[in-house]
Length: 249
Image (cartoon, rainbow, N blue to C red; front, side):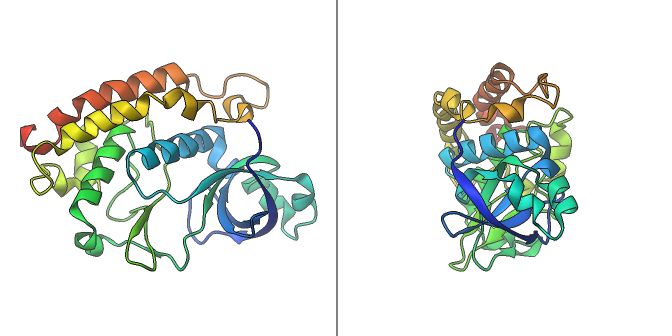
């Protein structure tokens, strides 16, 4: 996997984020939220794959790149121990900063377009992402009033519980989707299957160093092309049964 962009300057830790992301300026002079060691190898894979899938699924995903952090940037950083622990040398997942962002709050979700809400709900269910709730929306308002969808490092959850998902998700009340048309879940199912026809190209973008541990062994046996592709394909076909007026409510 070729480096897409180089990190030129490391600023400080992002205000929020369990994966210890840092704000960095890259060689295109733009600022990015960069995730490295703190996100783990599997977290970076999930971020990259889900960002690519989400974009093709019609979500407003910020521009994302694979960014390289040179050892010299760490060596001469005044907080090099912390920065090395959180980011580290090598390839990181970088998401372009949203200008003047503000976190979407639960009380504001009615201001989000109903189709956008339904699309996000379907997508999170599809990728088994439990990490979008009333208290942790992982959505950002932009200056023009639209939203950006971020943070998918907890996708492909091995402990995914359907009942809990529909109890916790930020847009759980939109599951019936009466305002977007009876065939919306079917349309999204077909879109998901079409997206998966290009999944190999998405998976091929994953750097090899993210797929193995420090000993050269496979980092996560369950996080492989065949397993993820088959799971996504099976779930895509179930969307019309799980969502819309056809589900048993």
